[in-house]
Length: 97
Image (tube, rainbow, N blue to C red; front, top):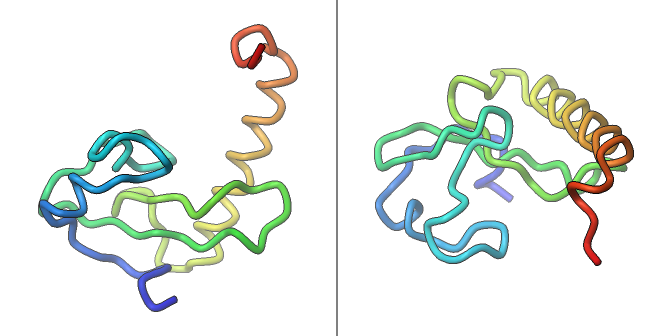
């Protein structure tokens, strides 16, 4: 998985691609800060599928990505924990019925 955990430069094609099962071009955003990436922005896809309680492989913008990949992975794990706590507290906003 050479494309993971390294900084890349966003291309027009990447910006218009399908990410996270959304329509093309809709979710090419930093999972940490929400920045919508545009061509020329730097980003990294961080491998987290091996981490319990974490979902997918998040995209990080260059401002949120740490040179130490494990630090980025830890930030994502913390974000996932926070989201789980919010889902429990505010269940009525995220219910799927």
